[in-house]
Amino acid sequence: MTTAATPPAERTFLGHPRGLATLFNIELWERFSYYGMRAILLYYIVDTAAAGGLGLDQSLGEAVVATYGAAVYLLSVVGGWLADRVIGAQRSVFVGGVIIMAGHVSLAIPSPATSWLGIALVALGTGLLKPNVSAMVGHLYEERDARKDSAFTIFYMSINIGSFFSPFVVAFLRDQWGYHAGFLAAAVGMLFALVAYVIGRRTLAPESNLVPNPLQPRDRARVPLLAGGLVALVVVLLLATRALRGAWADAVIDTISILSVVASVSYFVVMFRSKQVTPRERTHLAAYLPMWVGAVLFWMIFEQAASKMAAYAANRTDLDSLGFHFSEEWFQSVNPVSIMLLAPLFGLLWMRRAGRFPSTPMKFALGVTLAGLSFVLLSAAAAAFPGATSPVWVLVGVFVIQTLGELCLSPVGLSATTSLAPKAFTSQAMALWFLAVATGQSLAAQLIRAMEGLPDGTFFITLGAMAVVVGLVLAALSPWVHARMKDAEPEHA
Image 1 (tube, helix red, strand yellow):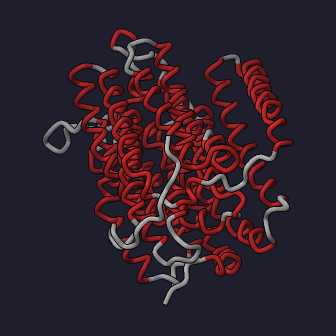
Image 2 (cartoon, rainbow, N blue to C red):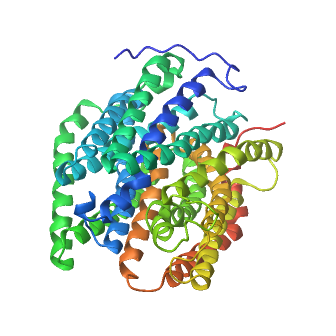
């Protein structure tokens, strides 16, 4: 694959470099692929074998889906490390895309063995691709370019265009020809992403083609030893948790949870202690840490769209309450359509409020608090509407509230990560951002299993209260955080 790149022409895509359009298209189709699969994954896992599913019980299926989401983002560590140390961001994206497509093709084959293989491949490929696409958006701009927050909001639109259409497509195919036809549509979406990437790669920043912190000869000799040690660690954890828990599924859930926490802590420790990190960059990392913790609580709630909230859609919602049948998969499109309607307004708001209230850490606090309030409201609805009587508008409203929180936290978080990342850890810092998602989903999986058998309202109020408390603490800390990151924020007129 050709690696040469020319500098992107300025102000040709909504006032941004042309490379943003290329990355927009890649992310759109990759997210079509990912969210199309996710829209039916829980239903496939818990459906009976006679109906074409894998036959897991409901609670275990929900925890498995949350753990799968955690594994996707946990493996972003691998993608970030490979990009920073071995092959660069551009090659990581291409290899990851090929692996994702192979995973969806495996899921399209009607066999339990190929299904589990496909899930593993999609997780691995997404880990290679996801952090590096976002990092390449940051590469298009100078360190303090005032357009960066706006660029990430536009980039976020591509995620939501792809994820809006995919549940409708996949739901139709599942109804007509079964689960595996839906998974095949995800494979086609990934193929489109790869085509967009190959066509537009010359518009990307030259920095995306570089290896910012290449392995030295002595380090290369250690890689096989480190890889072997990591594999051994995973095997030991699996065996130990299997002995304690008595079931392989729970052992996998626990192992992913442990690895998510250990990887997150290790990354912070390595960055703080690295000789390649300057004192100024360490100050930025100190500011980033409480925002990262807030993001963990946000994603703990938000990413349950494919697990606990998907189960609420199928089992607790009157899908005919609007006067027509509202398919349970369609709820997965509420968030992206809300993003498409609201993201331009938020992008304009952040540009006009640049340098004034709300600061970046206060935006995080608002996002986490809104996520918590959404589950508090869902808890009240679960108590008010017994059985499958909850109106469609309840879950739609919860998704909209979470979307408001997402627009306060997620695109701003991506921008803050690229701004506060040490230069030697650019892609790996983006992986650390996605480890917040992994840790949040791991925490959700543990709580799903721990609270199995309790009423839905108890589950939702517990997690909602946790997030609200963390959001309030982050709001109190925001002046301290902002003071330590102010010199890395974009310059404004």
